[in-house]
Amino acid sequence: MLEVLIQHHELLLKGFLNTLALLGAIMIIGIPLGVGLGVLGGRYSKALNKTVSGLKFLTKVVPVLVLLFWLHFPLQGILGVVIDPFWTTVIALGFVNLVAVAHIVQSDLELLPKSYREAGITLGMNPKQVVKHIELPILARRTSPNILLTQATMLEYTLFASLISVPELFRVAQSINAMIYDPISVYSLLVLFFLIILVPLHLVIRHLKNKYSMVYV
Amino acid sequence: MFSTNNLTKTYSGVTGKKKALRAVNFEMSKGEIVCVLGKSGSGKSTFLRVLAGLEPATGGSVAFDNKDTSYNYVSQTYTLWPHMTVLENLTLAPSLNSGRSKNSLEKEARSLLNRFGLKGYADSYPSELSGGQRQRVALLRAVINKPDVLFLDEITSALDPELTKSVLDLIRALSKDGYTMLIVTHHLSFALSVADRIVFLKDGAVIANEPTAKFFMNQGNKEIRSFILDLAKRDENIEVFRGIEQFQAYHIGLMRRLPENSVIYVAGAVGDQWYGPMGDFYEQYEKMRIEKGIVWKMVTYEQGDIDKRLLKVHPEYNLFKKMPRQIQNPANYNVFGDTVITQIFDEEPTIIQVKNENIAEAYLRFFEELWELAV
Image (tube, rainbow over all chains, first blue to last red):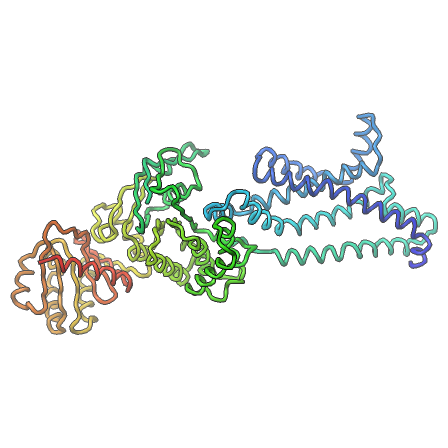
């Protein structure tokens, strides 16, 4: 395994960086837009709220792989455009991430008791102070573990990009295996990679969940 | 302090419009404590929420005498912010808006916590407190800024009796500090012990707005009387004895358990009403009373024939005075030890007994005032 790593470290590093770039782009689309959409849907617009719930349902019933293929093949065919598979993956998974994050924020906002806000207002705080000192900190604590968990899932979903020829880590591993035919070493390396990235991430999520699993009292 | 003029609130729902408040006219003076009673759905909470500005009125108005009047609202659901410690909960709002230093606020918050039995909890999070402790912190958070008015909405409804007592004790202590409070409650003995006045709401309208003593002890409205009896049954400090047999047994039992040389203070509207329901048991009662040297100290508007006879036979055990008609005595009650009773001389005579030291003390003070004015 070490031999494979040393011999093909350049390729593996390239695949690793591509995977990180994919994940980074998916997060950049999904987190800020998802939080924004979730806040709007949870607090200000019932129509948006229903739209987010509808899209969440859609992403539940349409498998991510099907969505990715649909965007990559038929849609581009219909529109007569060719988009780089990397960006097709970013759009597909970015959309799934955006909807998931928006749904998390929206649901937690809906669960946030109105009485917290009312207590602030009756104590003389203005709406901005209530949002800054009460609602946002509580919301951040409530949503961050689930948003992080979604990002871990997105990392796993990046594997699907290999099926539309994005040279991410899994695709690179497949190529290396095709050259040297040492599946045990190659795929063990891949397992190791995911363990190194995802185990600490899940431990962080668990820690945050325990720390912030406050009862709404 | 403030008043409402034809205050109206209507909710629109799937089943149509529902009037939660119907032209409520109400006034409150500085330092006054008013309890709002009424069945569930009568508009009590809506009334407080509209007054506190949490919901807009559909019609009418609320006018505060002074535009700088400050008020705080504490609701039946715990509203402590869960991401902050008790100390942070107490000091956040004033630190943002009052211009007071953080140090002075923290000092005051700690002193409040110490005074009301929450010493050592300043750095705890709400989830680490019991329900009663949380509600007490919520109350202290509402008073740290020294608001002019406190609106308290069923703040003990989610608590068990022991925790309820700790919260009610805190409100009693705050009432002694001179806070103006409008309180929605279903605790009869609590309302009796702190309220200057009771407002009764039915279907969003005020159908009674009377001094506490009159409301409980001399209630003319049958519906409210039945409501009081229902509440009394659920109040651990209150017992109801209904019917001739229970009425007689209560008084005979009272004579047996009262210590020798006790005094029963009686404030009554008219004389002689009591002897009828006692029937044949009156003689037994009277014999025990004289043997034990128990004194009746009584003020009434009129003295009946039996009263006059007692006054002649045993003047040392019957200290009777008459109240001039112009003296307002809204109540009809007896006080002995830590107990106050009111008696309803209906077809079915009824005794409502309230066993509470604070209430007994308050009624005794009221009795002494009447005694001074009577001749």
